[in-house]
Image (cartoon, rainbow, N blue to C red; front, side, top):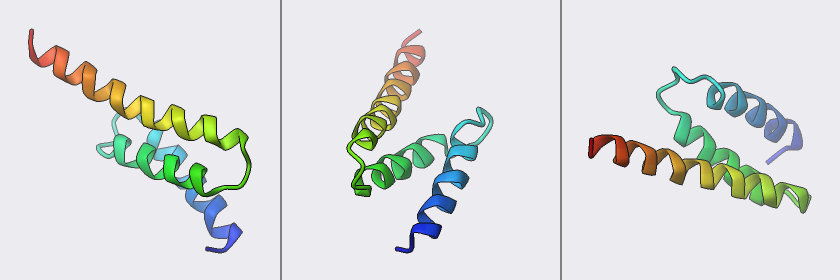
Length: 68
Protein backbone atom coordinates (compact mmCIF):
# COMPACT_ATOMS: atom_id res chain seq x y z
CA UNK A 1 0.00 0.00 0.00
CA UNK A 2 1.24 3.46 -0.86
CA UNK A 3 2.30 5.57 2.13
CA UNK A 4 -0.06 8.34 1.02
CA UNK A 5 -2.97 5.90 1.21
CA UNK A 6 -1.94 4.76 4.69
CA UNK A 7 -1.83 8.35 5.95
CA UNK A 8 -5.18 9.10 4.35
CA UNK A 9 -6.71 5.93 5.82
CA UNK A 10 -5.39 6.81 9.26
CA UNK A 11 -6.91 10.30 9.05
CA UNK A 12 -10.28 8.91 7.95
CA UNK A 13 -10.36 6.20 10.63
CA UNK A 14 -9.29 8.63 13.38
CA UNK A 15 -12.06 11.05 12.45
CA UNK A 16 -14.69 8.32 12.60
CA UNK A 17 -13.23 6.63 15.69
CA UNK A 18 -13.38 9.85 17.72
CA UNK A 19 -17.03 10.53 16.81
CA UNK A 20 -19.15 9.00 19.61
CA UNK A 21 -22.22 8.90 17.37
CA UNK A 22 -20.48 6.87 14.66
CA UNK A 23 -21.90 3.35 14.46
CA UNK A 24 -18.61 1.72 13.49
CA UNK A 25 -16.21 3.02 16.14
CA UNK A 26 -14.95 -0.46 17.05
CA UNK A 27 -14.37 -1.34 13.41
CA UNK A 28 -12.41 1.89 12.94
CA UNK A 29 -10.32 1.05 16.01
CA UNK A 30 -9.72 -2.47 14.66
CA UNK A 31 -8.42 -1.16 11.34
CA UNK A 32 -6.36 1.52 13.05
CA UNK A 33 -4.80 -1.19 15.21
CA UNK A 34 -3.95 -3.22 12.12
CA UNK A 35 -2.60 -0.13 10.39
CA UNK A 36 -0.35 0.63 13.35
CA UNK A 37 0.87 -2.98 13.48
CA UNK A 38 1.82 -2.86 9.81
CA UNK A 39 3.98 0.22 10.37
CA UNK A 40 7.67 -0.32 11.09
CA UNK A 41 7.66 2.41 13.77
CA UNK A 42 7.87 0.63 17.14
CA UNK A 43 6.02 3.51 18.82
CA UNK A 44 2.97 2.42 16.87
CA UNK A 45 2.97 -0.94 18.66
CA UNK A 46 1.70 0.87 21.75
CA UNK A 47 -0.89 2.72 19.70
CA UNK A 48 -2.03 -0.56 18.21
CA UNK A 49 -2.40 -2.10 21.66
CA UNK A 50 -4.41 0.92 22.81
CA UNK A 51 -6.84 0.49 19.91
CA UNK A 52 -7.37 -3.21 20.60
CA UNK A 53 -7.74 -2.65 24.36
CA UNK A 54 -10.28 0.07 23.66
CA UNK A 55 -12.40 -2.42 21.70
CA UNK A 56 -12.27 -4.92 24.56
CA UNK A 57 -13.13 -2.26 27.15
CA UNK A 58 -16.10 -1.08 25.08
CA UNK A 59 -17.41 -4.64 24.80
CA UNK A 60 -16.96 -5.26 28.54
CA UNK A 61 -18.74 -2.00 29.36
CA UNK A 62 -21.62 -2.91 27.03
CA UNK A 63 -21.92 -6.35 28.63
CA UNK A 64 -21.89 -4.98 32.18
CA UNK A 65 -24.56 -2.42 31.31
CA UNK A 66 -26.68 -5.21 29.87
CA UNK A 67 -26.60 -7.02 33.21
CA UNK A 68 -28.19 -4.11 35.03
